[in-house]
Length: 616
Image (cartoon, rainbow, N blue to C red):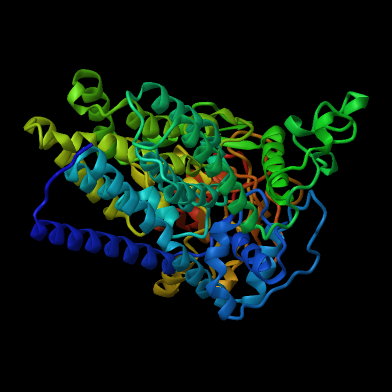
């Protein structure tokens, strides 16, 4: 650990720079929050959070714990948003969160964008907390240069900027997870009862943000054992027994905070009273003994009180059931049922800036070749193991592969660990220091060049965000975030007239003041039915079009049809893939392509597809 004696003037200067960087980061998040329409999943989090506050119910969006959305919607309680709870299903298997989000948007009209901006602003402190903890942990572990390096990696990461400006649990989970881990790291060095309380509260906040962070219940005991059995002597007045009691108190406090976050609603119900959907908890339904939808029925475990709220456990079960069921997944132009074990590793390789990947490579090299860059085994353990476990856990769920954002809770640990290369300045390894300086500059410039479209960021190896849709779709590039930019483009181009639009997500473009019709579907690029009816009614046809890149590759999600409804796009039926044969004339952000199809172009593509042509 670095114990540098820093002059008062230098400390004050460092604090001013730290405050300036954090302020810039906050301003960027706040600006981005106003520039983008509610995204695909995000639209359900806001009404769910309002429901939690107003009615003390946690059924909506139970697959994610409530802390991030409750923080996001707290200021909305003073904004008096309209709500519509029509047909809100209360049964344990209810997934009415998206219909609730659609009704919420319809009830508030164009004001929806303002309400989401306010909710997003309320989440900015999560990202600021994550940035500060990364800076502090790296500074204490590797030195101040490493602290600045880690701060830059967080604050200018396109992934953090893109998802940190949304009402989503990923960045809050990363921030609360690294905060809890930092407090635990400090506790391992000098366990006290006051720090025990803070560690417990931090862990409680982490598991209230994302269930993935339950991994700490497995990782921390290993870290504690590593310290206890390798430490030559315990801190004064701290016996193994006392430290063990403190350690148990950490988990008790965390469980208390978790139940407190749910208002103790449904806490400590007997395990046998639950009905599950996932194979893990439901058991083998083919076995008559397990036909009750609870593998613990008629066992000693059935009478055991569950120490977590009902909706927390039901949310875990539902998420596992979703992975059991699987889903249609896309990678590099290929669709398949189910995902790939290497999906997240591939996504990280093309979504993380190349400068950051260079620093990661250098960190691995210096760790293997020079002991001077290594910290203690426990220090390294507390950073490497959480990152590896998170990435390994999300990679193991191959029921579907759609979202690189699941790896975000691992990022702060990686940022801190790779910042060890900042010690090259201390060691006067100027070649390493020069490479690191160029790499962090590359990361920052590459990220800022595409801001505020950070959600769509891809690095140069992938061809940048222009080519990103050929690698990944969905939340990795186009999540319905650019409707406001589309409205601005249409206002600036009146010659486009009545543009026909295929928008992705659950926001009706009419909320942004866009009147439109759905483009005509056409034959699939990889074969399949062209549908029934008159071929002349199928695409391509002359006109102006705005097509979300998800539909260029045959996504199956419905599209708003311009009448307040959503049209089904069958995965094996006609769709909008034929637009890939046409050249866009412009783009809105990196998620929507603009096409002006002339009669000649329409006939050319129709001829290529074996369709009858239009008369001149």
